[in-house]
Image (cartoon, rainbow, N blue to C red; front, side, top):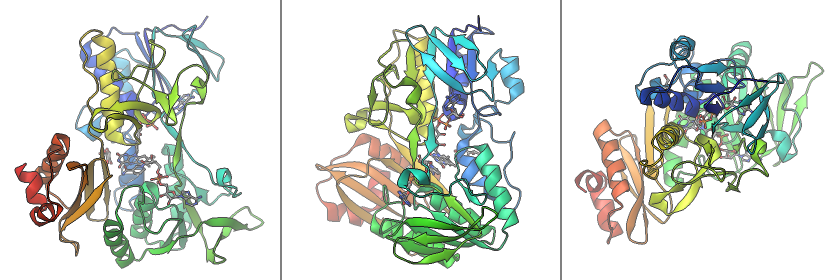
Length: 426
Ligand code: FAD
Ligand code: NAD
Ligand code: ISD
């Protein structure tokens, strides 16, 4: 016989930390809640790993960025969990789940049972091998998903100081790591298949601003091609990255950020999946009424879009986790989750925020030579998305509010003329 809990959170990342705080705010008894995590530390703010953690001066280190400091809330250390009677089962991988019997089997052979399960397993980094390239296990190749990866990246940066760092992928990880690597005086080249960076979100005009900024800091770009193989020496170290266009780049270290896959495998065949994630309703409840899913792994109805989406961002993880707990604790009262997608990044002295959806016609505004600038997306005559670089707190709040309201836009040229004033006065 193993242990039994009322509530079990499977996964110990961002969503788990915010769910735990919400449970205790709403008043659970000691011994009712358990978090099971493969990671060896309590939940932390994962965004810090590609930002403060990689900086050469005064880098962020745990315990400073445990959840929930990213939302200016309490910092939940191991002591906090103990004092609140929340059982932390760390360094423990769950191998299988039986949602009919309401049990989980851990890697150490323990069976843990629950009344309510919250799935917060997040996602894993895609590996080069999944694209037919070998060499991920080379000692100077790294990915970035968890603390162990971040420590490895820092060690590699130190051991190849001033050398050539090749960054594979032009998405979030690629952009944030390239910035940290060049700040740490590495010679950085980014390689990605698209015509411009952050292709899932940025327009060519927005991307061009960031690429020029990165170039001014010394980052080189090789676009429109992908890695085909590594040259690996007799010590198992990558010495060069060979590209499909026939060129080759000398390498002292390689950072790979080529996307993620949500961790759904424990539930395939047991719960309904949609768009790569676990399908949930507006209460974050899956096709089994005792099982909820939150964060990167959940595909939930996004009211403002009128369709279900799976989001891969921290704000969504925090808020979906809180919403699930509210729905669990207030069975008959909780509203449907009404979430406005929010993404952001901070690199060098730059900082941008995006709200909503990047579909439809795009209107750019502002000063693209280094001042405050942005873009609106307009679909079927309504504002559906807003991007802003270099805004003030009030300006970011204004674009968020305007996007949520989805105001009508009749004249795109007038919208362009008004620029930020449109959001501020809406
Ligand atoms: P995670 O935080 O990934 O947590 C999942 C947890 O589940 C992990 O602890 C994992 O070990 C555990 N787990 C999985 N399977 C099992 C199992 N079988 N048994 C036990 N435990 C298991 N988003 C932003 O909006 N802004 C940012 O600036 C930003 N920066 C980021 C920087 C980095 C380096 C990364 C990797 C992501 C970043 N993100 C950012 C995305 C954001 O961190 C994620 O959206 C968020 O962490 C998702 O939270 P989650 O709890 O769903 O998953
Ligand atoms: P991503 O989806 O942002 O970018 C993946 C990139 O991989 C693409 O832009 C493309 O350039 C590249 N790519 C795809 N296939 C490739 C191939 N075969 N060879 C070479 N390149 C290829 O994913 P990511 O950058 O790996 O980020 C991982 C996760 O971390 C995402 O969920 C992201 O949201 C999250 N994250 C978010 C932030 C943020 O919100 N500020 C910061 C860091 C990480
Ligand atoms: O949202 C975030 C973010 O971007 C971080 O770096 O949370 C973390 C914390 O602010 C780190 O302390």
